[in-house]
Each structure stands twice: as structure tokens, then as C-alpha cells.
Length: 434
Ligand SMILES: [Zn+2]
Ligand SMILES: [Zn+2]
Image (spheres, helix red, strand yellow):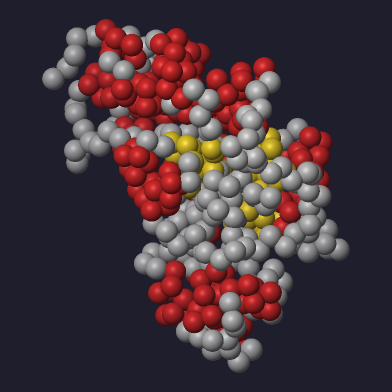
């Protein structure tokens, strides 16, 4: 989505941060939220740095959290793009930049691909920030009436540290959309050519980069390079805007179908930039019925009252992120610039964590029922434990110990107990295999 921010939500009072001024004291609600959020944020760093005698002690973890972070600001950046879609930075550079900007938790949400997640995770582990594996899915909303036209809708999905519980199903869904994007870019180019603005497919493909499904932004960049427009904004405002003379739709799925798939694969579904929609209430109502969890309401210029009200009406989480692409230019919000209140983040995690825990449990249970190398790979997909080719050790006991190691980084003991990982419980006490 182009971040020109020309939209008119009802801004509530813009809060200017006083630098160096007196710090406001947290209310009880805020400090409880802060405690719970920081426990989650530092879960894996603490379980890594503790010795084995303290790993299983939630109280100890909490104490460590409090000595370690004493009221450090917990910046969550929940919307960002890399070169794996239409961003300008590699996933690792994006993570480095996030760290420079004080971000503690980053969600990489490339369009229709999760290809950048492993690289982002690797960089984040070195630096010590947390990644929420995410994706922004391109969909179409069908209003089911001939009087209102279809419109593009972007839905963000946030997954557990273990990724989607049915990775293949999601991946196939996303691959279809990406394929449609190639076709769509070709259609846009042919429309531009008919408008006597010659653009070559090769240029667009080169700008998008190897294996990256081209988007509108790549076409716009080719237009700037060819000298047909002065800048990206002009390319959009004259030709590529939704329904514009060179606009084309791809083969995006129905928005509700995407929301249902996100729910089914253990994700949290959040409607992106609702202020860019023509008919937000109707879309929000229908997506809520399909299982939508939240709505972007916060931007770097503050909370949009109209969308906050809609979130209240439909009992949805209030979230937001900068939609950072590293495009440069004054219209782009900086990475980490959206100030999400700690209470909003807490509400998000309150909804997300049980979903993620259930999704991790499904993935682990699948391995226990059918201990194949591919089912093990599925659990370890995003973990730092890398197995040798061939799916790791043949000893199930050994592999289950690896799983325990992952679980202690992803979930608190309480969550593990609550989710009842009975299938892998007790294996610890068995004699260790070779
Ligand atoms: Zn978008
Ligand atoms: Zn985006």
C-alpha cells in the first residue's frame, strides 16, 4: 500500500512526546500490562541465558525481567516490508534498522510471502530483538451487491515463533496470489503501453528482483525510471490508483477466505490500513464474521478515532504499524514510529498467545503421532536449532528434547502446562538416547 497518508480519519488529539520532561507514572492497568508484555518479550533471551536449573522457573524469569528492563520502552513494530516483497531493505538490514530505532519486537509482514522470515530471525537473534513471523495478504472484498464495486483489502497475519500450523496450505495459498501478481503486472504494463507510456516487462522484473512477485510499486518505479512521471506519488495518483487507467487486479482470494485461512493456520488476522477502504464498516462487519481479530487503528500521527470506534463496535483489537518500506521521502513514517500503548499490546498478546500456543501444540502433536523428519522440520522451521540434512537424529527421545528446548523459548511454563503437551511430557525422564 502506498503510504501517502492522504486519508482523513478523525484524529484524536495528537500526542506530542515531551523529551526529557517529567515521566508520567503508569496506572495500575498499565504497569500490569507492562509486566505481562515484558515477560513475553524477554522469554527467549532469558531461557537462553539462564542455566538449566532455572529454565523451568517462571518466577525466576520474571525477576530477571524486572532487573533487566526496569521500565524500558517496549516498542512493537507490527507492519514492515523487505525486498522479499516491495520494500527496499533486505530482511537483515530491516532488523538492524529496527534495532537502531529502538524496536524490541518486529513483525516482518511482506506481501503474500514469508520468504524473508528466516533471514530476519537470524539477524534478530544476533541483535537480541524478537520477531513475530507475519505476512500481509492481498485479497479482494466482494460486496455481494451489484451497486458497490469490489475493492482490494489487505489482511495482516501474525504467527507464533513456530510459524503457521499448516505451512504448506498457507504457502500454496500465497503462491497462487504471487502468480496472479505476475499476470497483474503484465496487464498494467500493457495498459500503460496502450496509453503511450512504454514500459518494458524486463525492467519491472529487474526492479522487483529475483523471484519477487512484482507489485504496483515496482511498476511505478519503472515509470519514474523511464521518465513518464516525476515521482512514485505521481505514478499512483495519475495511473495506478485503485480503478485507475493502468490499474489491474490479480487473482487475489476473497478477503473472508483469507481471514478464515489465517485462523485455521494458527494466526491472528488484522485488517491493514482500513482508512484506505471505500466502505470500511461493511468490510469490517463481514470480516469479523469470518474470524477477524483486529484492525489497524494507530498510525505514526496518532490514533484514528473513527476506526477506534469501529474496533469497539465489533469487539476487535486496536493495533497498527508504520507499513515501513524504506522508500525514503518525507511522506514515509519511520520504522517503530507508531506508538502503540502498552495496554493495546497486552490486549493483542492476550488474544494471540493462546492461539499461538494451540498452533504450536498442533504442530508438536503431529510429530508425536507421526514422527517423520518433515514433521520435525515443521516444528524447527523458524527455530535456531538447525538439523543436519536427513531430518536430524533418529532417536525420538533426542528429538523430543530439542522440541522441549524450543518450547521453553516460545512459551512460559504455565502455557506449556495449560496446553497440556502430554505427548512430549515425561519423555524428559526417559533415558537419553544416543
Ligand atoms: Zn497494505
Ligand atoms: Zn504493508
